[in-house]
Image (cartoon, rainbow, N blue to C red; front, side, top):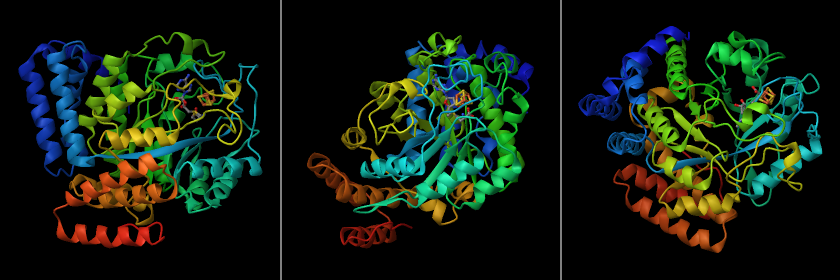
Length: 472
Ligand code: SAM
Ligand code: SF4
């Protein structure tokens, strides 16, 4: 699936072309045109050579990067509008037998306080997240026989059933857990609670992969690379991919991510539902986190995010609180469509005192969820907790078919506003309520489609009258 020589050659071959503003304009115009017109084929957007050329743009060349950013924003607005989906990570176990040189959970970090949430603690964590307004979780774990996939599945079922007043409920659980086999994927699928299975390849570069994972459960590159194939073979609806930025040349990683995405789309007619762009952060006793060998600076980070937006217009881009508020704000306009808020990476961090000694890595956005939401509103974004697609069978190929016709916005826009109205009624402070209802009013006025307008009006009335979970 990943032909390293081909990727390196493409990067080498396109260096000269990346200096030509005519060639860059040609690629950007093509991207814009393809993303604006409904396209049925994932791979018809840009060629890998086009993407390699964009990746070779000098990130300090403002003239070229501004054109790139403008195109990314245009495509994002066309396909996603101004919605930003919110989620929270929930770590359930930090036991890990793996040797990943960049991670604070690695087995060799003997000073880490190891913990598995008890059922009662898990419930407290979910309750605490619900009180912040969260409806979508990503549940995560380390890789250790002390905490098995069966333990995890039991915890998923518990988390899915936690309820708090006034209307707290988790409507969707995505999972980011170690590479598993087909039978385990079938068990995960059978819970009926799991949305997207997320797994980062970390690095697609074999030699680097070997160095970063010298032994233990994660040291087999192929087993990890083929995980998404097993997941989809087992019937999982959606998968999310990613690369840990800083381990190897980001240009190579982005081209590999796209190669992986296209491989999945060709084989299953489902591209990845999401792509994540985590940059390495400092982690305790993790040698590679201090000085990542290929650290990605902000300019390159913005450029690569914009390129992903352009190259896979229908795939969500996830940004976490690894990044600071300023860069998060900038990336919202370059292609990011989902963000975490109020996150903790230690075990039990939401309901107990935050304990950095048991966290996976350091975070750079420590704002409370409501602060992040208020900022989104002020920037003109609609915070969304929508999970409608999962309950309306719009997953996998069904989702992609609607998305590629450019129609998903008609469903997501009213659904996002409805979940946002729920948040304002149930969890927001006065300041956020005022700004939020004004945003809903403006957004409602901007709808021109008569039936969408009618649906939203009657659905909003239902929400105001205490009905929850109203969606198309
Ligand atoms: N333990 C599982 C695994 O590795 O497959 C599940 C994912 S792990 C809990 C979450 C992700 O955190 C990893 O895939 C890795 O990319 C990321 N990560 C690890 N150490 C990190 C660091 N120092 N900075 C940023 N992200 C890190
Ligand atoms: Fe364990 Fe995952 Fe961290 Fe590796 S990245 S040490 S597998 S938790």
